[in-house]
Length: 331
Image (cartoon, rainbow, N blue to C red; front, side, top):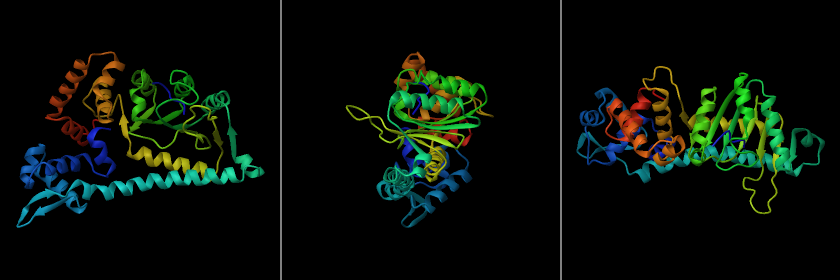
């Protein structure tokens, strides 16, 4: 979908429904033969109550258990046993939404000749027509545009999508969810920062199931074929208010809730915009080298700034930095 411009270990546990506090505690349990709450608090640098709360939550979720014969010491339940079921349930949520999209699209194709279907869904079969429709959709938006942006482009490059910038300037809200690989494409991080400065709300996930864009909850565009290499003809659907559009909106909201924020400013955060942006990219899983190349600084500079963030947070590792940032609402 229109790509306005060109997650690490913690992503997996976040996808399994663990908070940053729970994740830090679980990772420590995995590395030890048994930990008491006081020891956990010391290792994580938190209050005893916070450590007990994290342990209690891990016990309730089946991720930890007491050491046999030592009820005050706790160990981790094997990750492949404890996390597999939780990840499976989370994946089922996305799969159900994707299946709803596929089912409704199939129903559309099966009844394409009926007048009712023609009124609800219009098929677009050329890049030129799709590009023009994406521009019109954004030019006519009044309230909010939401979008799922995958790596690679179908109709227009990031630099060509000037319609978003114009819409942001006239007060249209944008919520854009980016696929992780897209953030590594040349020019994306600088252009993304520019959009955020103008008011775009941006988040990231490792992978996205579809490309799409929806304006004002009333009109959406969805490619029906995700990969159009070789002789495959581009085919997209212009979707008006319908059950299919409702399913797409629900899919976006489900993904948005689980994604990592990408920020330049956060109320109450002690970080300046450069360090806050760097931290959000780091938590989103963008590699140091990609950050350095796109922001036109050395990798040593990126690592020095990360070290500064770790010192400011009192963290010994990047995982502890992410945990501290989440606890203190830096992002």
